[in-house]
Image 1 (tube, helix red, strand yellow):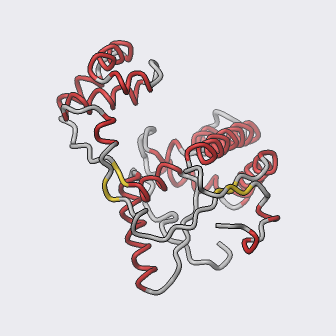
Image 2: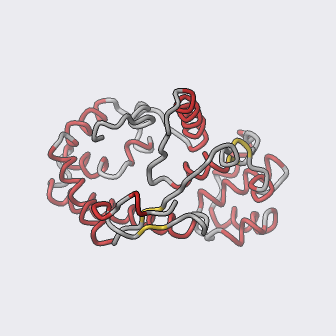
Length: 246
């Protein structure tokens, strides 16, 4: 980390599932602490949903009735989508008919709360964008340069003990659907440890998954960030922060 103090990095045990609202609350506390200490907090990272939740807030969707959730989760996705078209046509039009998790989420929200998702998304709460002086900058370096760094980073992870870290996770006996067990590289290295895949194949697959994830992040930040946020398309090595208008 080049001697720079980082917060909210590797601070949650792998057995716990994090969420955008939880992280946003933790980030607000760290930002307030930095301000109280007369320091400038710099928000970095590539998880767009988390950044947007921190800045703009979250939809105050009430807790879902467990019975409603159980009933909907037992449905076939085509049946759930047909019901969603009737009960929340706005969400149905926006979603892919095969996107089971989002379809069921939208249906359980409208059935449990009596209001569709877009109603709640129009009433965001808890954002800090209006309370701070934000100086945003979106870095969009050349993709081939970025992908090469992704490949090199995974090899560095292997060299610095990623295999041992995955072995430690496996010893915890965490369920396969635990978020940390689905993190890029963990399924691939787990397969190596179980003798189901050789390391060379695992590296190829994990590196490909990393590049695909980077591509999605790249597209998200290019298209989802506000139009007036400055974009910078040089490599990190070429950046002179004094020459960037923010």
